[in-house]
Length: 112
Length: 114
Image (cartoon, rainbow over all chains, first blue to last red; front, side, top):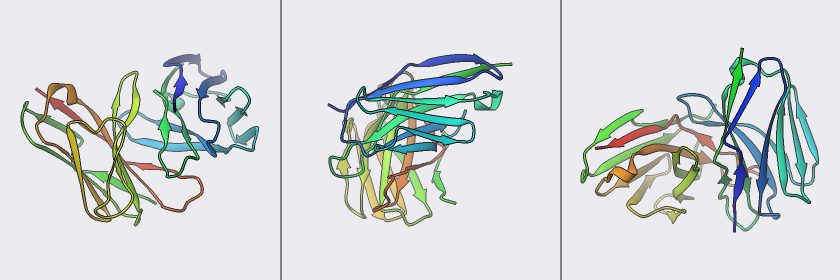
């Protein structure tokens, strides 16, 4: 079945790199996403990667995709206190339609 | 900028009450979604709609119904609220035909049923 799994908590010091990991089950997914949810707000798309890519870099963010292991990661370089949020991994299976499957979310704590 | 608004940020209702949660988007999106968000469980899809008057059940539709009379508005209805429906409810919308299926979320409604 469809499932997206990620760890629930991550704590890092300000200035360090953060790596949030995710595993997914549906190899047909065309796009994989990272959404960010700040306190008191809805989710906002942070970045996404197309399934035929291995890596995508966008300023401080690096997304790595290992299709063989169905593993997705988000690296945040030089993590700041403003990066404290919940990060959701998500996939849109290519089974028809537009249903997106979300993981449980990883709460990132950044210690000053 | 896409804007998705939800009628209330916080709501407190009593067991057995009928509850309406409203969601409005201003970007002419065809697809709209209702999720509930619970700690450790992430987002679970309740219902979605891909057109006016069309609706499809998500993963946890029991105890809920929806209404989509106009393209911009998608309502979630709790026919008889129960304490296990205490949760954060998130509405989202997306554009049909977009390659990335990006969803735009509202700020959420935190519902407490006592």
